[in-house]
Length: 372
Image 1 (tube, rainbow, N blue to C red):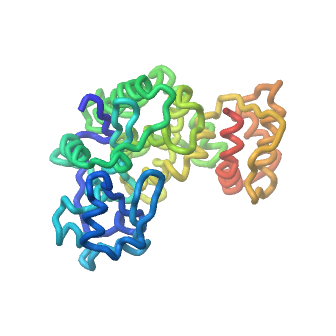
Image 2 (cartoon, helix red, strand yellow):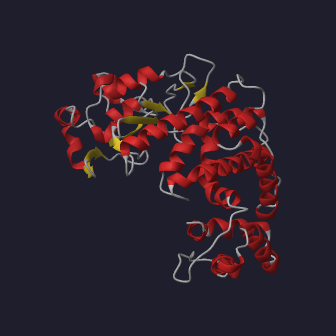
Image 3 (cartoon, one colour):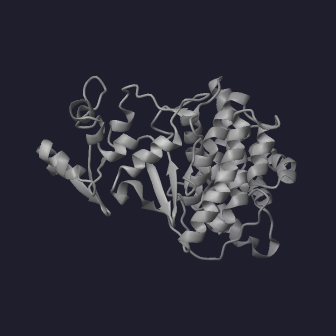
């Protein structure tokens, strides 16, 4: 267990199947082929053969978007009901804790916080040991061993687990109220320089006003607690996900500032909804607002671009994205921070907040290149 990093708190998330079928609609069926699950499934349900497919080294079965072949009208899995839990496809048996990755000798176990309506409970939730035992029962590495990219897997795996586990512990302590009372400060200090928080908050306020025309604020205690429970998972996915706003070695300060911007958008979202936000909503906010969060995180950084082709959106009303890219090219000597360049562009274009937000989200590739 020392070599396993779980991105959620032990015993604090509860998964109660409500028969909603959200996880059984069009996401595919991951099979423990090495453990004989494919042969067993084909023997008992030969009609599945035409619907099998290869995804890399894995063999899976596709299931329709409206519902899985085996999802009964009462919301239950026919395979589990008729043949027992052991016969249930491996990825389905693990869900929502079925995102299992390997890096060197270490394992990272993540969860799906978008599809599954997980609940945060005081205790008695899903235990790490139980999930680890379930993972150990699966033989196929394509289900429980997706490799993470690394140049030195042994060293990077050890560093990832040691660093992120410490950050997660601090965040979970702050979320559970066992910290010193300043949940935001404690969570920030776990991932960045504690003394820099006040200056970063000032930058966030300025960026939010300029970009979104909305104030940056700390969300309510309920939303902040949910965000802290969720943060380690989102950190892991940003570090090893497809966006790659910076090399992983350079991501920690950027990621901390993105996290602060995410909390600001969470506060805006709960004002809009007039209620506290949960895990699923907060996950979606991170996913949707990541381009703006990155821009805000880079507010005081200096962007530069070499002249040459750059990816531009097909639709660019007012030419804001193109103008931003040109400003990055022209910034080689001036070395002005993103805040100054954006403020100047906004003043010249007289763009309203809607146009600014839409343009910056479309400019994700330009921003990424400008800070590469």
